[in-house]
Amino acid sequence: MRAAGREGLFVCEMITSRGLVEGDPTTRAMLAFDEAETTRSVQLYGTDPTYVGEATRILCEEYGVAHVDLNFGCPVPKVTRKGGGAALPWKRGLLARILERAVAAAAPYDVPVTMKTRKGIDEDHLTALDAGRIAQESGVAAIALHGRTAVQGYSGEADWDAIAELVAHVDIPVLGNGDVWEASDALAMVARTGAAGVVVGRGCLGRPWLFRDLAAAFAGEQVATLPRLGEVAAMLRRHAELLCRHMGEERGCKEVRKHVTWYLKGFSAGGPLRHALALTSSLAELDVLLGELDADEPFPTQVLGSPRGRQGGPRKGVALPEGWLEEADGSHLADGALVEDAGETSGG
Image 1 (cartoon, helix red, strand yellow):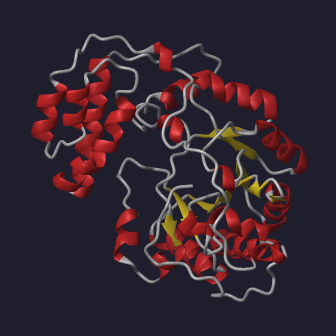
Image 2 (cartoon, rainbow, N blue to C red):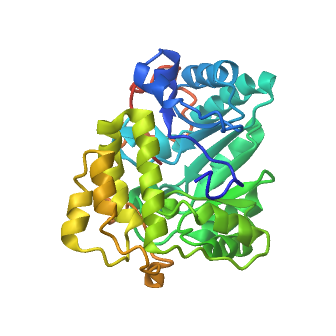
């Protein structure tokens, strides 16, 4: 993605604060930066103010990060049932203490702390406006809002009006997240909400050139990258090569399998070939299979603007700690009252 579009801030996968503080090998291994990454940005997950504060210090002091983003938007049950992710902002007092600890830990290194969140747990338990106020009072540099509730997961349409409401509610920059599939969507979101920028998650799956289009669009250029299948295959091959370099060939080839569907979405590659690509176990095998694709096939414009990645339907409910919704303050929660698995990770 950096090679396709160098402008913008690229955040590494989410890591747990407890895992980092306790030296969990898996967590530490995830903090791998290329020499070309001059701006190191990390997304941190945590439920304990002490762990989050110490993890922030470690990131700044030992890893030289330039930005820390706190994830309070993850809707995955294994995270919310422990009071983390999108569940945590319901406890306003706890949220404030976590943000204050992180900001204080990053301040000596002049590293900005931002946060990402959702509209709330569900429509009856909305948290975004309070979270924005607390973030501003805690010294957070910016807040990103995904325009869905936790119970929605990734279903339905993102509520951009909720983003506009938060923009009007706080003075710090608000970044909009949700349903940015094309550069034109980003322009439309900013125009409609007044957001200071956009956050892209699923929209870049199989489309690393999206960031080049975004940079061009915000510069006032009319650009839509439409690579032929041969160019897409070359990007997929490069992606696989980098995964293998990072993880080893066996695991790297397993990891790239899920990306095949996203890269080939809309193209006419036949079912047997797609199936074979989804089972590839070596770079040599991948090269043979990619060679069977029609390199001159034009980009399938019919898929422009369509969702990518996880969708599904809304959940029946959000997994939460017992009694979580009974009161919204959370000031009584002592450090360590919520259990965070040292090696647990998840997207948000």
